[in-house]
Amino acid sequence: QVQLVESGGGLVQAGGSLRLSCAASGRTFGSYAMGWFRQAPGKEREFVAAIRWSGGSTYYADSVKGRFTVSRDNAKNTVYLQMNRLKPEDTAVYYCAARRSPDVLPARVLYDYWGQGTQVTVSS
Image 1 (cartoon, rainbow, N blue to C red):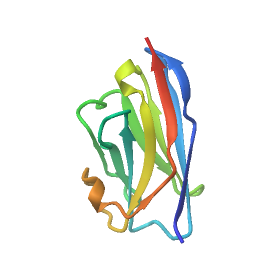
Image 2: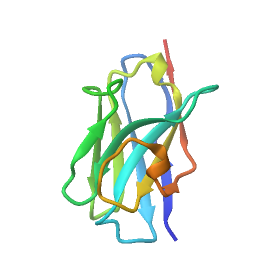
Image 3: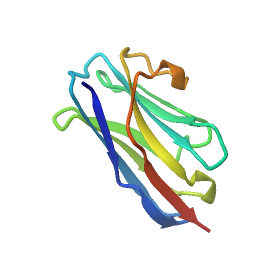
Image 4: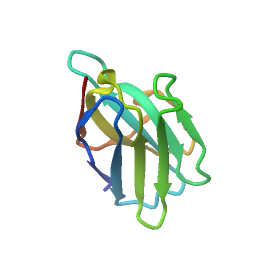
């Protein structure tokens, strides 16, 4: 059974940085894509970034391009989201997701497994 466990959220001032981690277990993820999504209060869950586990191709939402970087560590079975120059509008619960296909796509319905989420709060 696939398990995804996020960590690294917290409270940070605008302009600061955080690195989220997603520890994945239960499968060999070489043929998977991994995604990060976020959900702010009263809003729908939205795509943030995705990475192909094998090969490392990435895809970003326009709102985070140039500020966020998604990466993975094959040895640790962990995916990261480095978030720099954070803004108050980045405040949300951030979720890690896994897709049983290597294509990096933004639609949340394409992802098969989800973590429990980690809160990120950016103060102004």
